[in-house]
Image (cartoon, rainbow, N blue to C red):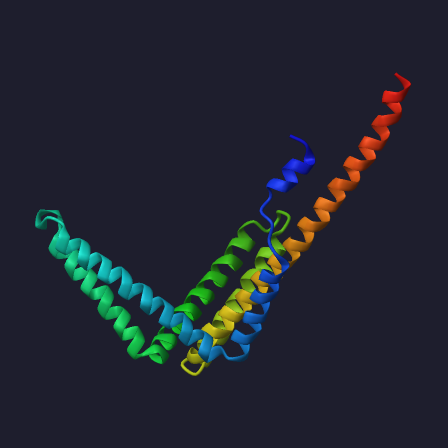
Length: 199
């Protein structure tokens, strides 16, 4: 398989996908309450759908295979989804609290790990990442519950913006790689012709 065929097999990412994702990320950061509420509604829809599917499976299946347990589990999923629909702001607050605690503990753990591997190369990067994560978690917790309505939306926006940037760079990088492969193959073909003519 030649280089051109190998590059052709790499999935192409259109540039517009990355740009669209970046724009959506900026919009989510500009309106974090809307983005956070949308995320809660999406989770609510998924919970309700999975609950309904579980209830239907429990009603169709034989009772000996835990049908009652599946029925209760499905009903709880539907109730959880309905609660998310009814109380999206409260849910955002709870999710933000959990996120703040997670980030704080994760950052603390990364800092400890960095000191455990300190003589090795890269420990400083791990420590810096841990400190940034710890500070972000501490910031979210110090502003809670006020940060609850906006933090999730802002974090979703940042994630979408970064993902869009990566997709855009990937798109451009693959385009440049394909052009470089074409140039190298053209050079190789031009160098091979004089050798064929001599023989």
